[in-house]
Length: 170
Image (cartoon, rainbow, N blue to C red; front, side, top):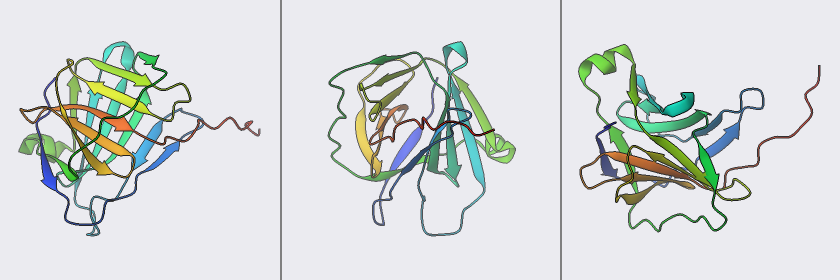
């Protein structure tokens, strides 16, 4: 699985990510404004792993604007899981080829894994084979990991709210 990206310096205030759980589908969505400009034509990139797991990246033009985890990859609990300390802030740009951009969707397959802390407030999504990668802050409570070749390696979702346990009303 290869998804080439580019980190572009952040030209505005660090966006605030808002994580929300969908109670019925157990989808976790984290969205944040890519800029204050009106949204551009969007493209979604679905990254699929084993067992039907997948993560969806939503682009606003070339810039990542949201991430969704709809079917959770195999995961393990790591008691003392903590994110790396990023040295820079930026925006994640993905430039799919023109055919993909015109279609509005791209699908990738490859290893997808997840680790979380015991209360699930910190989640580390790993895309592709394990490798060294630089963490970059994209938004408050959202880090991306990109390797030295510009390939997307993973995400850190921080301060994730607990899954809602409210009783469904019929």
